Image (tube, rainbow, N blue to C red):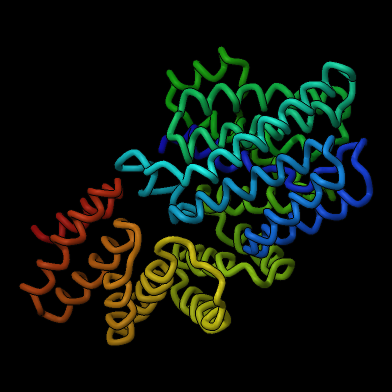
Amino acid sequence: MSRLTCLIVVAGAIGFAARPALANRESDALRARGATEIYSMDRDQAVATYRQAIAADPEDAAAYRGLASALWLSMSYRRGSMTVDDYIGRVNRNAVPPSPPAADLAAAFRDALDKALDLARRRTAARPRDADAHYQLGAALGLRASYAATIEARTLGAFRAAREAYDEHEKVLEIDPRRKDAAFIVGTYRYIVSALSTPARWVAYVAGMGGGKDRGLKMVEESAAYPGDNQTDARFALVLMYNREKRYDEALSQLAIVRQQYPRNRLVWLEAGSTNLRAGRPADAERMLSEGMAKFALDERPRMFGEHALWFYKRGAARAALGRTAEAEQDLGKAVSMEGRKWVQGRAYFELGNLALKAGRTAEGRQELQKAAALCDADNDGATADQARRLLK
């Protein structure tokens, strides 16, 4: 997945509960509830709630977009591609084209998004200086870009939709500079365009998408501080951006806020542990991961694909860094025995190989490192595969 695709992913699921001026109170309340359910990882409930919002107001574009967002996140969840690791550092694209989503989910997503786009376009045509109308259209286009990038693996199609979303939300800021919720998508796109290669950056400039990492990050921070309905989306985006910038304390601050707001969201505990690992704080990582694993041990809701393996790999890596070898090997052994992403299993084998070499078990360590290199190569984690090969030499 290219960096441009990463940007589209971050900025796509915006404004689950954004409030159009024409929505009725019942639809407004239902959309707010649906947003809470999404952030709490109750996706099936969110789908049902957004359908109720649509029934309450069939002309509410945000309700259709909320439904489409919940369906898209369900597809991403089933693929196991909803963590910061998927969009920074070594795991940065899919090794093979993703398998198509379930036909009924894909059809329901397209129907909901097409309706949201149609309603939003009609509003902008009727009211060209209505800031919220342009906001609704830009938000729907951002979601189209996310779907094209993550589910359909169509980078060009994603770029086109992203460019339109960027234009619409720039229009919002031109009409009403107070709408800092619109600064989220514009800022995110500016941030990531600044990180593209020079040729790709010029393509983005020609297409009308501005750059500027610092400016882009500041705009997203303003959106996260603004009491709009996409405030939580901006916080999640900052977690990713701050991790990319190695500003780990700031990422952890955002995660602490989200963890307090949505205590049923397991992945926030997982991300806090992962962020502490990147920051070189294995004790804090181990504590947070153990707390999350204990808190959600009896959580019977469906897990993200490979989620169990990911939890055990992360805690095993933290325990290995702390010198708690027996506990680390136990966690890492569970990680490689469970269904999961190949890069997760590959990194777990890398940790196991490293521990074996340190203990003088050279033959065992070499076997583990060979597995690590093969698995990481197969899931585009080339950096870990190279580390494994260096140790093999």
